[in-house]
Amino acid sequence: MTQISKIVAILAFLMAAGCQDSYPVVLPPENIFYFPVGLAVRQLPPGPATPAGSSQLVVVSSNFDLRYQESNGGTVLVVDPDASQDTALGGALATYPGGFMRVGSFGGQVAIADAACPPGWPGCPSACSQLTVDPSVAAGGAKVLLASRSIQTLYRMDMSPEGALACGAGCALPQGVQLLDPYGVAMVCNSRGGTDRADAYFTYLRGPSGQGWLTRLGLATGDVSVLALGVTPTYAAAYDAMGDWLFITGGLSTSLAPIRWINPSVTNETSNGFEFPEYSSFQASSVVLGSMARSVGVSNDGLRLYVAIDLYDADLLLNTGQLFAQGGALVVLSIVRDAFQRPTMALEQVVPTCLGTGELQVLPPRPGKGDLVAVTCDLQGALVLFDAQLGQVVRYIGLDPGTGLPILGRRPFGIAAEPIDPARAIRSPASTEYQPSPCVLGGSCDRIYVGSFLDNWVNILELDPDQPGTIALVKRIGRGP
Image 1 (cartoon, rainbow, N blue to C red):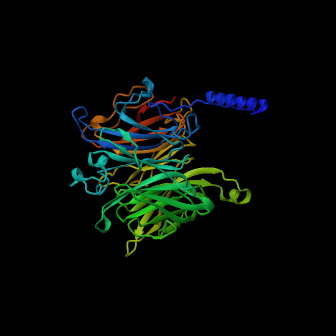
Image 2: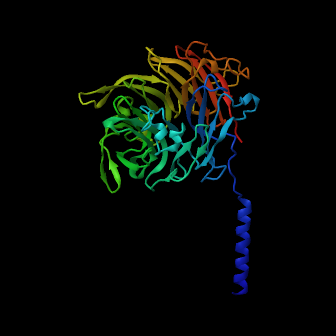
Image 3: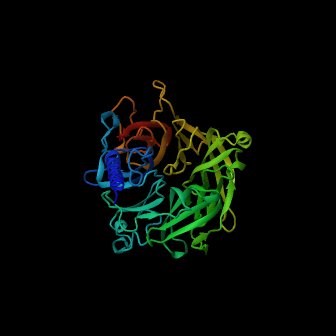
């Protein structure tokens, strides 16, 4: 080795050492939210310490600005929303022991599948104690499903009855190069054809040449299948258990933006390792020219489809190639079935909502009344509550008239909902920024969770479903770094 080559080797070593010192490994803390995206909630039965029951709120943080490592800078937290501290008092989270897991960055939606998954996990509830395929569910726990867009990986975690998360063999599933930006997830549970099934379907925001994909994970069997849906990527999905149809909205594309649906119980044709299901479609642009279908939900009675759409100037896009969002709307479609139970779409309403891509949540059923549907709009910083019984928006939560800031925080996005015992209602808020819960003992009570993407907290709202206009912000939990 010459003197010059020795000097070059030494300099290279020093530079490498310097780079390593300059960019230390930074991992996200275990007690914060950081750009929260996906929310899901699971109820626990009453116990000695919680006679009115309790909840496990699962929150996916996305590490959106890559402050932490890309490969494991996202997090999944399982928190007790009742025991978590209000932001007015510091926002300390009551995380269930072991209820934390690091995942890839840029997370998306999250779903929980347990023995309550209709009509019950395979073998449950009659034979849960003998179920050996999935010990976590047999023991009273659940599966937690989510994806990382950044590292193109799907996760199917185990969650214990106490809320502890585990990601062992077969939990993290890297995707093929053509499966870009995994984002949405929907559960399909049925007993069609005498076979119990519990499957998770993932959507992908992008695909080569605009191809649309789905991945099906068999949660009890461990099977993995990739489904091709033709042109236009997939965005979100919702399952209609009454008719056994999975509805999928189009992805980040203005060319077609279709709403497609498939029958998940039908055996599909396969080629080169991919499945090619038969699907039908409905063009969102046939409802409103210049619209893109986003989040989707099925009514509690299975007779309607709710689709949140973004509105843009179609002429401007055609002439300049530039897309400018102008607003949003909720499309209400009747699901009309023919003699073979195949659905077709009939337009009922187009209801203006607010500006920005957000999430849609159909609230728990109200006996004898129509659905309540909540929609978040991140750009406008708002939440809209639609009453299908009245056919109109009954509450809009937007800017604080005093501060001019969004009441729910900047960029409200992820959403989840559950019915709760009114005994859990928060009637004595910790701050004058909130209102006491309108829920009363002996009545009904719904709780809505809305994540603030930029303020790193989760809002808790409560309402009497018989008087939805009384919805109140009762608490905020969590904090950022």
